[in-house]
Image (cartoon, rainbow, N blue to C red; front, side, top):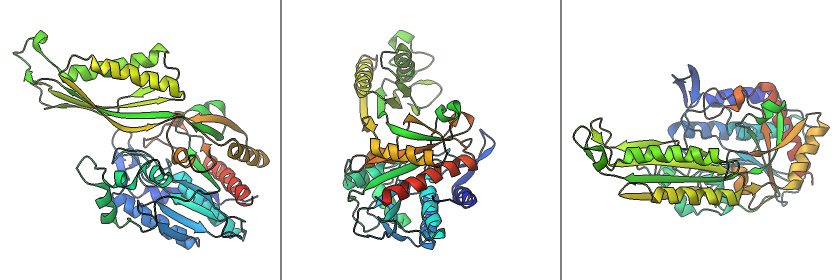
Length: 412
């Protein structure tokens, strides 16, 4: 069995968290804002690459900025086992989301080096570009292009809120590589990630075996009304885009509460009204709608309900733009079993659960057998928040399972 250095892993997590660190006034804690292809992300990438090279990895960067660190196997021609996740963050992040998977993969390599151990198959540690989708609007972007669901041209032409083009930002920070972005199918893909939910903590498990990822739908909705004076325009003559936006938020909650759509979750994470003047009835409202559901048929029914509701709103026009859409992705039973068996041999109890969040693993599952290791989060598993926290002991447990699973697969 491979033993990891838990203190080294923890130190790496904390050092990476210093890049993009900010003082969060809402929590009084230090958070992380390391959005994709920003200067902070570039600094994080350079730090990671330095660590990879120090561990003896052969580092390459592809056309979309995805980073790969290769450790040769005894039979280099064999397809590799890939361990990966991401180091980009949302604007109000903690130190663990994504980073535990990448730095956990690095710790796997470091621990193998410490033990002077070799694997039959090569091992690759991957850090994917723009997993969060926060800056350029499409989540799991780097892995989706690498696996062939999205095109490189689509990715290059995405723009952020300031109109900056992704392809140009890749060049600006020096991470537009020359390795082809389409990935040859590896032998297997394993990802370690914090759960980002309360299930493991509630059930008393430090580590979980992930069975799959639920369906995810992102839309940008624009409601067009008519501007009018707030004091002189009678209520019955108004076409209030702000009111319509509020009605959408309430309707989404009613859809969830109805039970008609199973375990549907619905979130309006961004809502803006225009012109944004206190004395003017809004003539435009823009909002994002995030729907999640483990059942594809019920997700489609929920989307149809929302579309019908938007069409019936008392506004002049409704425009919708699809930001992201993925179906429920089941993970490979054999890789799940390899994780569970490894954990059992290590004396680490596990439970099986589905992921409510999206992950790069769901994209890799299209081209290779894939599964994930979840690590328990504290404070009800809060994530995308500076309060995000997993203990050093739980991180070590998850990465120990990751390491020994990867070695098991790479010895196949």
